[in-house]
Image (cartoon, rainbow, N blue to C red; front, top):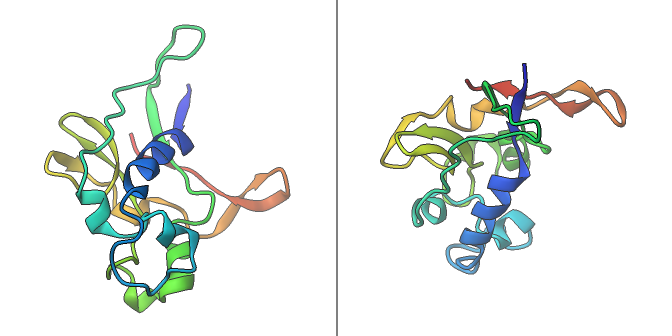
Length: 146
């Protein structure tokens, strides 16, 4: 059984779409790379049409049966280190998440056609509990979404 981890491809495309708006908003985190790319502001994400991830076909012709999310920096935990947990959700203090919409999988925020948001940013593990190239407990585990 294969699980597709919705990682960098969709996020990179969405990031590129929001990067054009990078200078807008408050300067509270202007020194942080996420702010410079406009990535942690819900208004930026909501301001463009979501990327639609319809599915995936592997080299052998099989398709994904399950979908999962994972963050390489702990999702909400990364934002909280700069904004503080009490400020999470305020402008420039969110972590984008995956949603399932009527038109397919999306990355960003809850869009108009969102059916399921999987707990928003809480879908990403916030502590390193999985093994990786740097040993046990060195990476964030994935969360199966479907």
